Length: 427
Length: 65
Image (tube, rainbow over all chains, first blue to last red; front, side, top):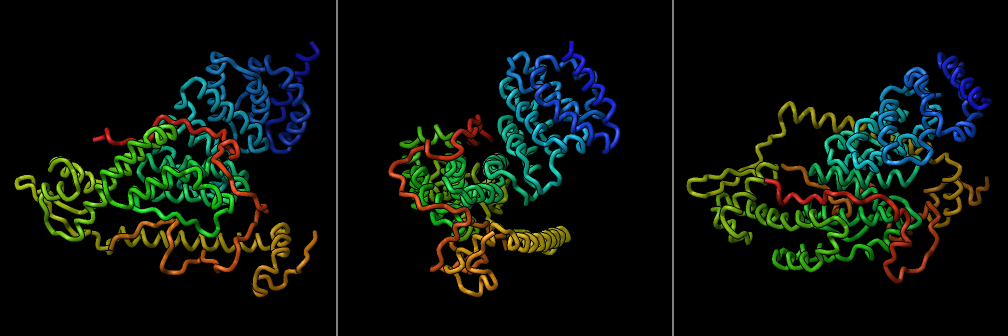
């Protein structure tokens, strides 16, 4: 009875103190004090939620919902909770839930776990995107929910929806693991959409990110980086940039030997050898769920060889293309050429009457209004990025941790690099 | 002229803004201590080895027309 009165009192407070900022601040204090009480009553809170409006009483609703979802749940219960949480995410007020970001993240993460348990990840795609947009202070902030959202996009093959989120420029990261997962899953989203250039950029970020211990995410990212590099660039270099962590430089290749050997075999240009290597190591690629990408690597050899032909010939028969590139028939050659024309990888026209392919010049003259606008917007983006980098550099050079570390490392660099930094900088 | 795709791990002929003098050691900002060489591949030593990576799609597009 006492507990029910306490619960009723809390609900009354939530209903009465959700009107303005000052009231909400006061309410937040009450809710924090009631945290343990709510957890102890978690199994009885679900009916209480119906007395609250998720839009008006978002903060109070969040506290109760977080307690409700903290209890272990069955598959049947998960189905009910998924509906409640999705409705809350859609209706809640961003200003209120940002006051308790950890609780909001907990609710959303459990929501993701529940849909995965139900094997219905599609139910989380839209709500998680909404949750991110409400949680993040700006589009430049990476939240813990970003990788969860990309995970459900990958599980449901909603690559286009995931790609939309990847268009934001991220400059604020709280947790390294979130960054690793965001870039790894993001790379996979781009692979799914065949945006291989962007995929390389994201996977590169994982591999070269600062890490004191090698991350399993970086290992998997490096494997995919090797494959995408072969598909997109037709080559792969084993050297790491100097800013790569020593942990990665020291150990990463040990975990990716079959992929490095694949790259070696690819570089010989001998398709039969490459295919033999793939067949012998098939199981390893299957375990890594990379066999499909490996097949794309093999296909890309034919593409590279056809692209080389465009640099030598103006016209060539489909039969000659098939013979040179080691395809089984002119028909197969035609399919490859058509696909490459469609993907913008070559410019050509096929005369089906005589089976001749005419290779054409890139029609882009780079003087259309669209191209000028594209160049102009790229310049604007670069200028904005340069300004942001300058501001970040200035901020970092005033950071006590950085200055302290740089001061200790001073003797390893030229005097001019750290002019004015005392040798011993103790804080 | 077609824009050239960028190889992020390749060595450029033209010096880049990221170039560092060869005689300077990599700045260990995050205090990475010296650790001995890993004798054998051991996934249990890896950080984040519990991350979710079980996706159905392996990007096999050989069956797509």
